[in-house]
Length: 255
Image 1: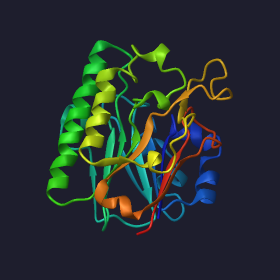
Image 2: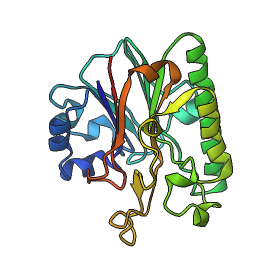
Image 3: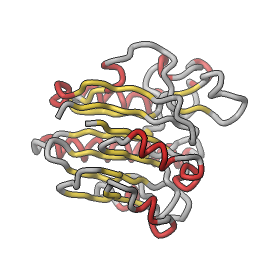
């Protein structure tokens, strides 16, 4: 079972750059997109009903052309929910949840804290509320996978220039500490199960040829709880896939 996550930085823009052809060729069992920047009623049939997939959207109620997530899945989920029950977070269209037989999958576009002190605070509150929510489900016996743009590089190995970014949101100690807590609670950073090497990034600034020089950040992740580790057979980034300032990431499960 192949799951892919990708911040497309606008699903309509991605479509103009060959998204549907890529989807047909890659053919994941589940595809999670973030930052779609569109409501379903703004999209054509080929994006709301791509061949072979069910589509589930969560869109921003705050403003159009902002945030948004979608899950495309070949298998029909047992249950689908938008958000996790807190209006100030759910209204921005940042979370879609699909429950399958073996796990619950959260596709999340975590907030960016760079714009202001207020948005950094919002991001940290989102982090706390999200972790509390999935921990509540885990304690009820649910198996959790969450993926998406976490908007934080965890360790120095996860960005090209850690020293220069120590005081920038996305690499602040308080943000990184939250990922530490996620790991301490038994969630596995899937990529590091297979790849310990540096220079594996998922986002590059669109300025000054950063992608060509691989001056990037790893801010997109697949986390799964330890009980699912035995099913994890691979995890990797897909830096050669263009169409966004992020690249897709993937995991493969033997389920």
